[in-house]
Length: 614
Image: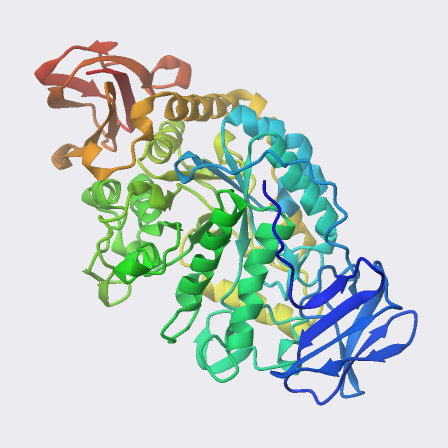
């Protein structure tokens, strides 16, 4: 990994010759000073553009400080690197250059090799810290994933939260272990060949401990988001706001050596400028990618089915590297569960999953009953490696009424079918922690706010928001400690009974995906999807040179016969109907020979995989 000269242009930066340099954007202030908690105050000098700065020889690493606005109100640093006592207390000076990185030989992974494991630091282990994740990295290697995605870790109020209520974008959560422990986790991942993705939020900040408006016009009332005030990316004085969040992305990629950022809900990032914030961010990240000789990426979460996010600027796009594909999830889940409430109203038809396999987006200008308008646009000009797909993730589990997983109410054959549909797809797969062994613990929404009125507002909002799932009894209280503790997973379950069977199936699927060249094809011309709609089955043929793979997916209630051409000699490598997977018994032949018209028997809710040469 090449070193660069990048340096955070604001916040508190220790100087090699002693002291600390402070810089903050505060155009709403006449005067700004730094007050050290254990000492006196030091005035900063004003700059053009609303910044205040100064080198303070008396302030050292480890000192805690506050900014004093116009001699009265005191606030933590908007660009604080660490909030050791939480969102309402002082910031701490951190030396970003002292951590002894050991990943000099790490250069990242090609995008096509990403197989993502999403986890929440607080509920992944009993301890709920960055360092507690490290002993389990070898387990993730055994599973076969190649990337770890962390839900947001920026400082939020209290000790438990999903992370989307963060108010200090540069400060790793104190209850997780702070900046040094996060660096240790990233370093440990790289030592094992695992990339690290971080979920970041550039569409809003949380309500509690959010003091940015006291410094400057970070927010706007021209737009609104479901979670609070929208950020000011295109109004008066918006250039420094863009710079603040652009530097935040570079901060994570440079100071923490992260490999990719997942940008939360980019459809709620409002920027009507000629040059959109996302386009500018992508251009800068790609410039650094070249300069560093290290693969770094931007993944977008987006609900609009807009391929412009992925297209290069030369084609009128923003140039992001990949995006989450909710349509794939919705099409898959509704076929498995028959749920059609809320946003699932638009899904449930078999051909929608076939279209998701062919095109990624199901709604490509079609009328949406849920939205009551036409929705989406085709994205078939984009390679399939630009889409992240999943059967479960934090939103699709956690926003259910009781936070229930598929394993809570779906039989074994459907769990295996869901796994294969995702892991053998021509997209980038994402697993949600515990999914790989059918974890039964729910994943609830939880908070630890201190304001009673805010807590009550969250309770009311979550009760009204839930669009799916049925809860026996009361909806879990987001503010209760028990709601958080109930969401912790138990990785040891993977060794027991049906959990071990599911885990073994996931491992075998991942091994096939990584070993067989045909599963590494991401160009649409080399992926053929054949639908047997009346039988609720479809076949996917993929080819890479002489390597070929044929996958047959059945979402039917009955055994069906499928007739299709076989272009070469193929051996059966997976049959979820086998007795070892507690299936109904094998019905398909162990091998296929070249034929223009072969008939293959497939069992209900099962997957068959053949691989070989042509």
